[in-house]
Length: 313
Image (cartoon, rainbow, N blue to C red; front, side, top):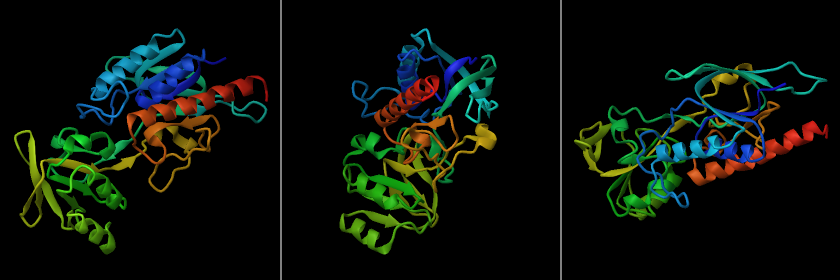
């Protein structure tokens, strides 16, 4: 009755790991991916066993090739437009119809699936500085655990306007105490937290920023609105993240205060049949290995849910 057992939205680490795991369980799986990864500007990814330093794009390509090596696997380069539940049977969830627009000449998609896994990642909103994106992925990064080691003992900046900036600053000090924390006018670091940081040699700049400063492709500092330029050859930025899942329409899974999709122990949202894994779920972006592990964990739960449904357990 269905084109696929499971449709996965998103072909990043979580989606590909889930897909590979599911086709190896003889499930018919379609991954729909728009090929707009959040880390498109990042040249190297770190911390993944056997792939430390690999290009994120090469990582995705290799994962896709491994997934598509199985007969039960399908991949579509498309943007999902809608996920609509099919009429219930005996009061129970009965699957979904998914519509997606093909990208870069690929055909449109109109299929049915028993379950849906949302692994579409996040949209990033960086602090509103004119040239920050020119340095994002090379000099500036968002994942301290991923890219901190390469910044060891350098003059660094941490730019963030969110309430977790203090914790992020503590992480950066593992690699360099030559650190300036910029809150860009936001009151997100308490006086006691500032005292702790300053005791470690960290400078806290609470003023408004004008821009990131560089010479050609190299970042050299951060310019304040008052004209001062604070030296920094790189560092970290704390984006605001948005779980962009408008395609779910009226299904509207519950979100937490950060806008991430809330899930139960099995990875299922409060919408029956809709699961989520990876960056789109709390606590948000983590390392590639964690995203892959989450995708595998949730895919195992989905596989068991289908087994139990077939046996009417």
